[in-house]
Image (cartoon, rainbow, N blue to C red; front, side):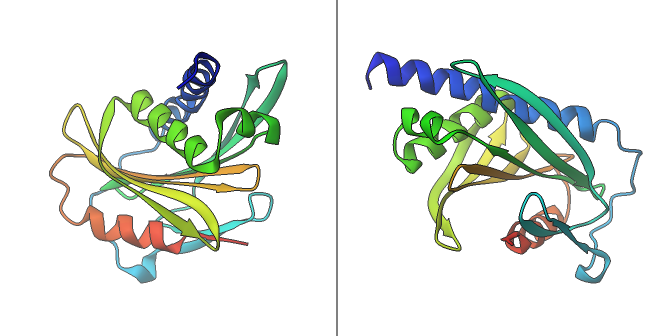
Length: 193
């Protein structure tokens, strides 16, 4: 890997690592919720017209946005939607990047790898399984990860033209009973509009 690309990948990893801190800040503000696996009828569809997506959330999500700088002198905004059900935390974010910024990283698969590395570094986790995938024809990456404190989770990253979607689920405790069933409900319900 050449020096310029390594520098850009490192910078991108730093920018992407803002996502976990944003999620932590948002999810830390939720009131205590009793840990109960929820049937599919208790989950509600949520649609973001501006985000051009639809997904099932266990509760109405908290919505946040954060603006950050990109080189050279450009900026972008990350929009985040976070919810939880007492078993796990569910987060979706999207960010529009200038095409030139994405191209500097490389092919879409290189960009998604940089996103994955930035995310894992930001949450202090390692990937257990990474698989390329597609969503409605757009490139993506599916990651199962484990944090330093033993929590495992799932992250899906999709690059839709210049828009990056991050769909993330992390259990609230290491021995959460049925959290993976709800995680799969959340992850598989995500679709583009």
